[in-house]
Image 1: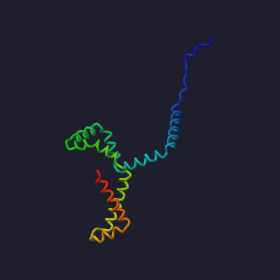
Image 2: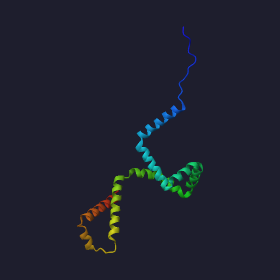
Image 3: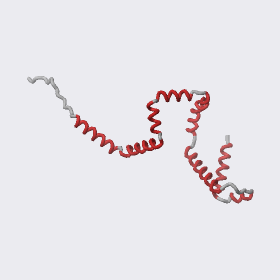
Length: 155
């Protein structure tokens, strides 16, 4: 009969072999995630350029003290209405038609830009308003404004 094996020698990698495997694993991870790594570096550069990275590091190092100061500040009576209204604000944001607001915002920006370019020094008569309604852009804007006011007046 054969003798029982009592001494098992495990194969152990040398430090150099382990380092080489680790380097190869990192190379593969970099190759697989190149775009994400480049975006991460770009984001870090932007944070560094704005000084935000230093702020984040300081906050991380003194997080307990910073959070204590934040809680102490937000606990003041002047912030109570804000804190009470936060849940309502979150629900309001859920009800908003974001794409419609984005379109409205874009149109408002176009209107403000046109107003700044044209100026407001000249006076407008009633006859000028009637003539302006023949302009398709003005007519479309007036029609949209009337529908807006009508919708706003509904219960």
